[in-house]
Image (cartoon, rainbow, N blue to C red; front, side, top):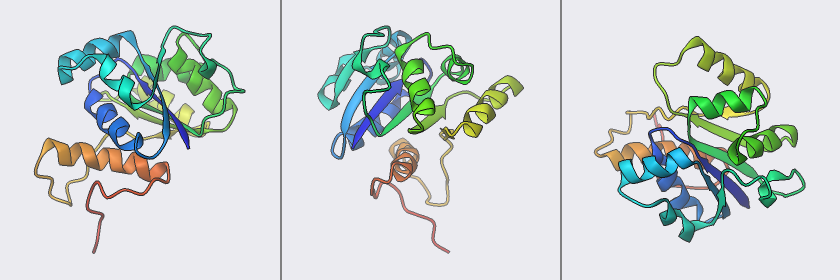
Length: 182
C-alpha cells in the first residue's frame, strides 16, 4: 500500500508525526510538508522537518514536477494532517497552488481515498461549507476530536486515538486505543 501524507501549516503536527511513525511499518510513504508546517514542526515538536525523511520520500510542496503531481502516478490514499483552513479552502475550490493541493485534486478526480484532518476551532460557516463541499465530493473529513470513554491518561493516549481512527479508515489494523464496548 502506498500512502501520501500532507502536513500543512496548522497546529497539531504531533498527529502527523505519530501517524507517520505508525504507517511507516505498514505502507510505502510519500510526505509533503508545507513551508509553514516546517516552522510549526520546529515550534511544537522541537524537531527539524528532516525528522520525517527516515519514514518515506519527502517532496517539496512547491515542486509541480514531482511524480505526485500527475494522476498517472499511483497511490492508494492521501491524508492531510493537520490541514489548515487555507489548504482546505484551496482544495474545495480547485486552486492547486501547492503540491499538497494538487495531490488532493488528483485524489478527488481519480476517486482515491482522501482524508482531511482540519485543525481549527471554532469553525466558521465558510470552513463548514468547504468541508461539506469536500465531503460531497468523496473526501473524508476527520476533525481530530478524541473520545474520552477510554479514559486517556496522557497526551499520547489522545493522539493515539485520533491516529488509530485514521488507520481504521485506511483499513490498517491497529491497537492504538481501547475500542468502545457496552
